[in-house]
Length: 150
Image (cartoon, rainbow, N blue to C red; front, side):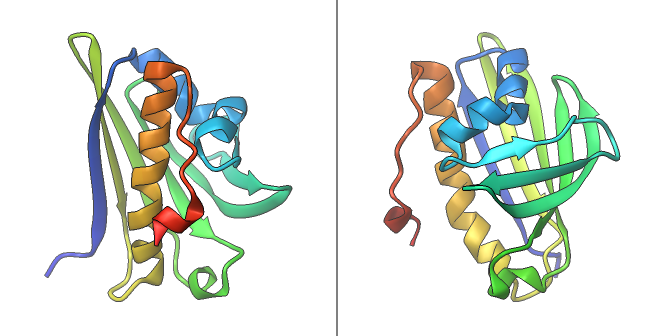
């Protein structure tokens, strides 16, 4: 049996450069990621953090930053007791141009069997990426209520 992982694929009417900017911009992340701010210089081996209401909720290290094709980083949740004790996992974004669309493939992997974090991100990533898609295509991020995330 393989290791548990999460994969999400969508097509966005944008350019790879605009999608890359949204994936790495503190200002844009606040719009589509429940008000959270991404912080990093987005260079390989640099740290990154997700900050919500002034509190760092996730941290990691940039594994790959091949603008505007591939971004990956380790992912460690640090605030919630249920997730905090899990080992770091890895998030990867692959951006592929298909005509006027960009195929975005998100992979989150490296979870231990029975991971509680895997269950959490399986609800969170679809909401985040849907909101990102709406922001890039319509200029307005979705306001997804936390109650919709189960």
